Image (cartoon, rainbow, N blue to C red):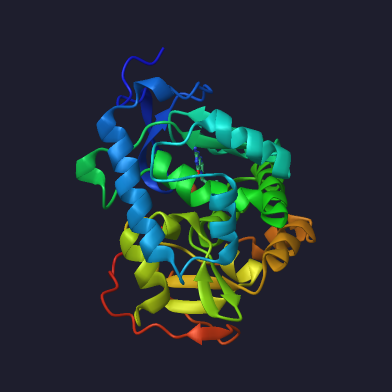
Length: 300
Ligand code: HBI
Ligand code: FE
């Protein structure tokens, strides 16, 4: 039972490769839409308007097309039930309400069944510029528009199936597949005739990173290669040192579906991972980062 819109049911904490993270109940919850406060709706509106302005000319066209087709606006926090009618008809995906980050296997099972978990609660006003865990704004605004694009919708399902398979191969494959998600679904860039554009949800929902990822001299921007990405560490607490650029969503889909990941895991077995900021001989470099302001401590 949900008593108040702003108190998620946190059930335990767990040490993971990403540090000490809260783990929530895996239950699917009804979005308690009526219990959002006026402040919650204002937080949504503030974030929505700010990102829409920032993302003009920065996010890919497909993001805006999805957002418009889903009728998302600053007016109010969208109702999952209304989004679902449109989304389900378009690509067969359904949003489900959850309390927050799920255990990996549970998350993969949902994706494999074309269910996208969306955190039902929204950040507090004092967290407006940064929150370390996914909330409703990140999940709904950042992730859901691209689920309207058939090839991306298929990629996400294939990723979920890949995750279930990786979990059977062991911890190392799972780590490698997590990096793929991080550098594509969360922090991916795409090359278009108009220049580089954002498609990663972690960037799309971040005020600072929507500018930094495209315009800063500091980070590397490197052509996407599935094995390269699966060997690359990443940052969880700072902007990325490296962004990977896809040529098309079809390229992304093929990279996940064509290989039965088995041989890749076998080739990568025991191979050391590259630091997040490394540039390799074999990389297709769009921009070599200046490295300015990079933290020295270890990457995740
Ligand atoms: N759970 N709700 C939710 N949302 C995520 O994005 C998510 C998750 N659990 C695990 C997870 N992401 C990552 O570990 C990815 O590697 C898949
Ligand atoms: Fe996310």
